[in-house]
Image (cartoon, rainbow, N blue to C red; front, side):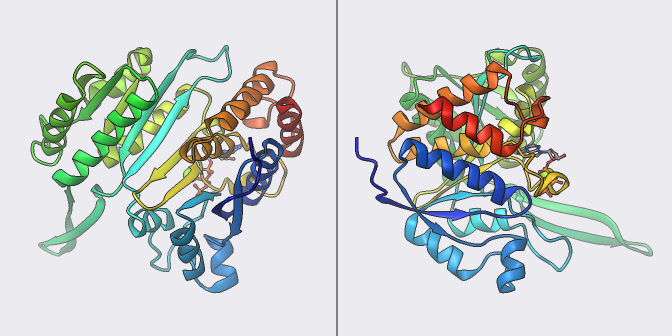
Length: 342
Ligand code: ATP
Ligand code: MG
């Protein structure tokens, strides 16, 4: 098959360990002949220092042009009234679906054979962050309020995305996770739309329902019962960190933010300033995100090759980074992965 670089894609090195893991992933993608033609763009503190903005116009324009981005972690500067750059990106491009797969790679851990995907609604819920204080007596901040919202349209869209994914990827079941017993409208609407969409997939994909607190417990006591989970923004945020913890933590957790006109692929973890610039970071999360990006552009064949190399190297145990109990550097792991590809 052609190895020409025909697909323009935005590449954001980002902050902290970002440039190191991005470099590693690009080398591995080049080794398999991935078709991406990179447009380098700035984001995060790196962009703030260089241009005065954490998300420069050129970066937004590049993603608008390519509709595709691989992104290192971006540090949201504390103070100065900055809104999270990740949240801004999701809103700017209507990235409605946050897809976070969790799969056991390292055997011998507490949870083996985990293979599930969380679909998190990415634009609404309590992330709308419409918050206020109400004064009482002498205290101007006596009461704090937060108003979340969900729309029928977005609930329908995220659940439909999960079911379509299930069909395309031979997944058996989608679980609707909610709290409609308490948040009867906010998550009741999600459940109502979810049931409606599920009917269209009857006979093809099973559906069931869980209240979020019960789901959290079961993810720890019996995670194998779950296949695909679809849920609202805040619940998805929390549950996807939980599931990353089931399989060895942040070094192995990829994510995709999918919209109609753009998709942004990233590691679930942050910029890890404590190990930045030390050649210690595990690039695997971002590499797994790059695999999702390859699948997104129809090159599952290349993603499968990279997946196999990751499995081979990590299960052999000889070359592991510190987060997985090893001593290997980012460079050593990258070299081992490249070698395992041939
Ligand atoms: P940020 O503010 O950007 O989220 P953080 O200080 O919260 O940064 P995280 O990146 O979220 O840091 O990481 C939390 C911990 O996990 C840190 O100790 C970090 O070193 C470790 N960690 C995160 N990602 C990786 C990785 N890819 N490889 C190795 N260790 C990692
Ligand atoms: Mg963090």
